[in-house]
Image 1: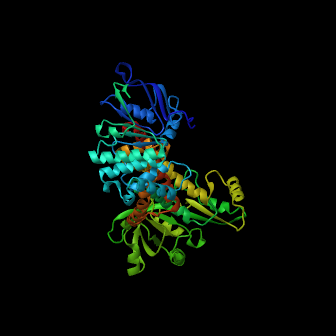
Image 2: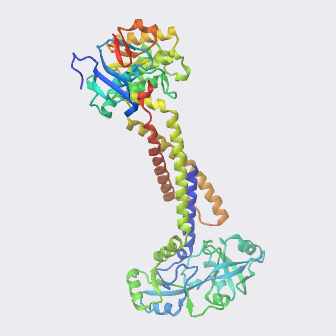
Length: 230
Length: 358
């Protein structure tokens, strides 16, 4: 199931996607080609409605493909069924615009939730790994706090820890800094970049926050469902 | 919990009805009985010739044959003077064909003319006979159109067919029920010699006796009485229907709880899906919630029902008890109800689309 070494973690070609059907058919992606190399940090930018989020959900196996060819972490998505997509999602770390932490679990338990899907781990181990991950994002002392007791930046850092804890092959993020102020956003992003670089995990991130463009290896601009630059 | 109490009460009443309806046949102590084939229930029995009792004695295994006379007559409340129909049970108290607690002590007293024993578990509308007896000793009361002396009390219990019971001797029964033919009886209890083969004796009796009697065992007699109430009246159906309504109401409540819970946490569910949790895993979570609701509803529901049973049993004098098999049955039903509600609520879970998370 794992990709040959030469194959990039994300490799897509001729991807098309449309919402609606019949007269209401509205194509959002037209013939998109994109490849992300191992360890590469790619930012996807573009105006609203350009299709960048749709592209991200397709790569993240949250949506079924319609046309084109897309291989993520060695899994061909065009032919993948729901079960295969669910398996693939476990190997991808997601960071959402809102932190989406579970309010009734502590930061540590939230991070451990990702690990629960890995076979052959017990609760103790998972909590220990989650604690180490929170240490890495600088929240070692807030591990037992509930999300409501954390600041926005801290919550997003927990979300980063959650995305990386499962040692994913790819991190997908959508407007992860949109809800944060300039400095906090930059801090969180630098943190994410550093951790990803250490682990050689590629990041594909949708943003239209110009303040973080300097952190990327490559910026890909999308407009009207087509890659226009990058 | 509300549904649980509702179902418990319905089942409680239902079983109390059947228990109380069969309290008379269950108190009888004999291996075989003769009844008229047209008798539907003991409280309105079809009379048969008393001579069948003597004919039954022709079968050597039959040790004794005790005719039991059943009728309803007006009992005049000794306190208020109001009249109310009571069930009369006329029999030879010495023959040992019945086991009413308290009867053994009254055997001699009941032999005297115009004496009766009153059921202390009759409904209070018959008057506080036990209390009056304790204060004044044997006193004169009116039964049918005759003055009788109450010499003691027995325990039998009110039923849906009879609000109160009066036990008296054969002769006294005839004195009260003057219009009854002395040659007719309602139920004949046959006591067999120890070690007799009940089934063989029953078969032999059936072949010897004419077609105006039916030979039944005690279990059959109880079942027959029970079936009358279950099938011959609307009561069994009403209680089953009530239980069903309770379950449906409970299911709607549980469904609403689960549904709104899923709706409020739709984002979280979608997040978990995006993280790679499968639909099946989340369905198990919802099922878990349904089962927790089942337990949360059942435990206080059962405690409350137990308390209500005591209250209702005091008010109606019906034998209402919390029984383990019933508790298990109700739990199974509540369990099934919550699972159904959970399955319905799961459709909402499908709406948690992880693609909407971005």
